[in-house]
Image (cartoon, rainbow, N blue to C red; front, side, top):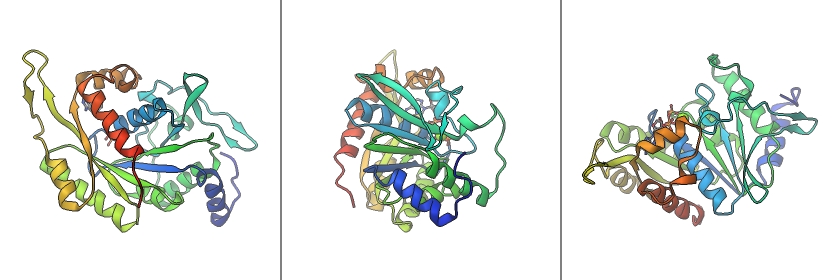
Length: 276
Ligand SMILES: Nc1ncnc2c1ncn2[C@@H]1O[C@H](COP(=O)(O)OP(=O)(O)OP(=O)(O)O)[C@@H](O)[C@H]1O
Ligand SMILES: [Mg+2]
């Protein structure tokens, strides 16, 4: 990393300079693990990029940084210039590229990160102040589950954060935890852009009938109950798993599928969001 010697105030100034100019800064969070945050973050970022918005992904999951794996850029080694760290750039045609930075780029493969709170805060601060982003319209931060150090740091360090997106699955346990995520956001004065109900129903590929593996509609009910927008539901699609494992964003090749249309509908709602 660069700029090691800065005080906290100087670092915050630098963060303002680097990130303050990005108009839309969104954190993707959840109460529970494994509900599809990284999948949502990556596909939303690509969908935004395909709609013409310059987009970057900040992988803020220190203990399980999965974004590089989902984009097959695990072996990327960022260049450090006197100005700062340059993110990975994934070309998407017409000279445009999606920018990605992840702590995974700086770690040994498969090595666990064993850091306590203050060290994590420090790493994220440094991360936010050192990365030289291009001219972005959107920065999407993918967070670990829960309401711990990473979401707290991101919510406090990113200046004028646009809002949070809360991903949930439809079961009662997941919903209970997403209420906590909504309240966390509200307490930190981060506007809740809405709730996404992921893994919501599965269409049998043989008979076409819908099966509600994890129930359905709970995310929408929870959003209503908490007074926050509902952004949409994404069904279970085995192709999403295959694509994620192969490092290919699902939305690139399947925008006409039920899940692809759901992602695009959500992006329309997000890009039309009028703010606080
Ligand atoms: N709608 C979906 N249909 C099918 N599989 C999905 C769907 N959404 C996510 N998955 C799969 O579920 C798994 C977990 O997703 P993901 O890693 O995005 O969750 P996460 O919330 O980021 O997890 P963590 O809390 O560990 O960060 C992945 O294998 C992913 O491909
Ligand atoms: Mg994740």
